[in-house]
Image 1 (tube, rainbow over the protein chains, first blue to last red):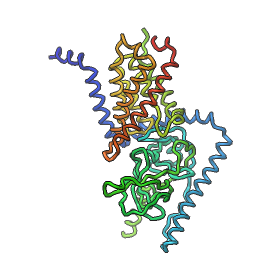
Image 2 (image 1 turned 180 degrees about the horizontal axis):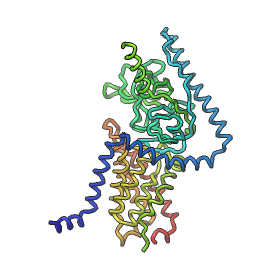
Image 3 (image 1 turned 135 degrees about the vertical axis):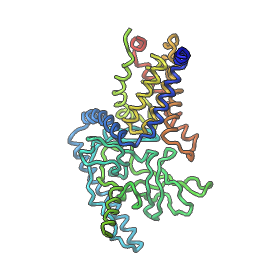
Image 4 (image 1 turned 60 degrees about the horizontal axis):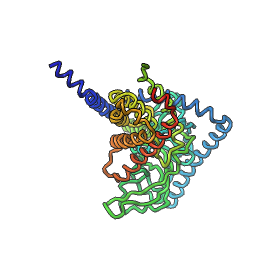
Length: 278
Length: 163
């Protein structure tokens, strides 16, 4: 019997190892978002990010870097204020009460530098030089002076991985600023799309697309991009709207983390509500 | 005879650094070459199938952790890639497979398999246009990786390659 197994192993060892490793990989896919995996990921990517950070520091002029950082921060703050003002203007036009609006202009911004980026048409990520020690947490939105970049996905002490909008595992609730129509934004077929849009929607080419106040991931209204074209006009009951993002993900170097996590905000609100009725 | 089986692991760190620092500047419309695949295939051809399968598994796992992709997606793709690259590790044909054109073609073939498996496990979406997805996510990326691999094999001194 043992001879049979010995011969079997000798003849098929490559296949047996392949099958075993595939099974292990499949099992690991199910553990992707577990706490242990996040810890391991943080440890591994931060080691590499340190090297990248040192390398990019060498090529950066310190003075220019500081000036740029300050200007970009100002730009980002102005972008948020502009976004809010546009929204206010639309609401006033529609004679709605704007008192309940969230004041995004007072949000604190944590400025950061992109130390490395993983370019991929399916799961693009960037690594930034802010981490737990700076107050960054998983789920925090990341913006540039142009608009939304993505959300924090994994954090080590000094670095964080950000899933950009060019990542098919990121679905965000957005709305067209002009019409107020909501939809789900997704990276699909190598473009950013609002999917399952009813044919009755009035979104037109050139409409600004911003994060919706209904978003459970990003609690701040941030511009995302501009509606470019409508697809699937003939088939099915839904359309898809192609959105051109404001941010050029290949060129973005300085970003800002908004230190708020949507789920925490919702949780606090719910707790406050519970306290009120006790 | 020197034990060279650990050499690719020494090269892995610089290759990962290049992948996230230099390669983004070479990307064309989101399509970028895969340096880890080139390293894996090159050293699998120089060793054997078992070595390629295990090395692919380790390289894929580290790539998933470093790049923030779904843990296991690149791991499974690189494991299969290493296994297939092992078919080109026959001792009497090794030198032939490591000539620029042959190596480029091998990288292209394995690149298609690697990218298809990665795409399947990281973004399985039936509503996507399959042909368009196949073209951009697998074929074009494989062509780019293949071209880069040809340039690299030309640059590597022959004496080092076959030592």
